[in-house]
Length: 339
Image (cartoon, rainbow, N blue to C red; front, side):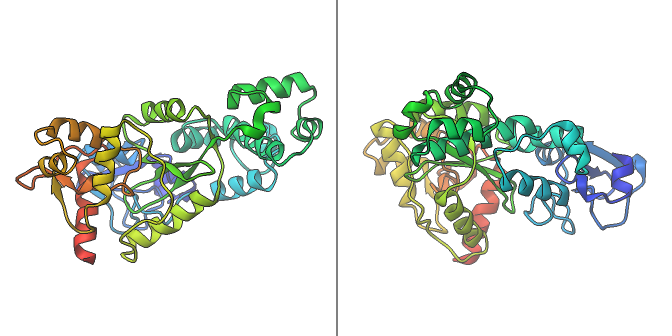
């Protein structure tokens, strides 16, 4: 890490962060600012760890900003996978193309929560799923994705989607994608009907939320892309740029009648304004149910889009935001500034 930081090696951006004791900031390994002495550095695996250690983001390299990530080699690798999702990539193949397998594996585990090989398997299965739903013959799909036998393909397909390939025509999945933002990356999920998940990737309860999502929708979560993920990427970019106040992407947020009433009430809070938990409870016809509103607020699976960040204490103080109070303050300041 010392060597990568001193060399300003951008290929390590996203792998670790450097806290500078003398200035109180943390940076990417590729930061162009003056290099601090080794004894004044602290290394962190995630931006979240650096933030909670008391460091603030560097204004030069902006470690939380979308610009500069993913590193160039990662962009090349993703392009390679997307060019032919059915292709298998061994460690030897990666080395031959100039990628270090250990670095690739660590980066994917950190950024996507899975190894590179698992990511590739997910992409192969997603492509196969889409081809089957379009009516392509099962034999062609199995052989076209590198499976030597139908039984091997059926087993892998069923393990991923929870259904045999023959039933895929009537099955949908949740396609998940990575979205960068000025306040850190988000994981987004969408079905053929709309956006059903949007959450910061460093949230402690993320694994539990994804498991709940699978159970709620009775569908697997696989890496990929669709029109609603593309739409929310564009709308979030406009939102952070101050050019959008309301999101148009179709939303899916099943829940109990009380949960849906609370989430609907959140959607009615005007841009740039806040409401207290008490006022939200009153709005849904349950005055006094402030704790239940707070709990439902925390169960919101569509951060930013369903604006749970606009709910504050009665005295105006911030509390209860799964993405971190600093993000809540950022979003409120952004909206007030653009109002």
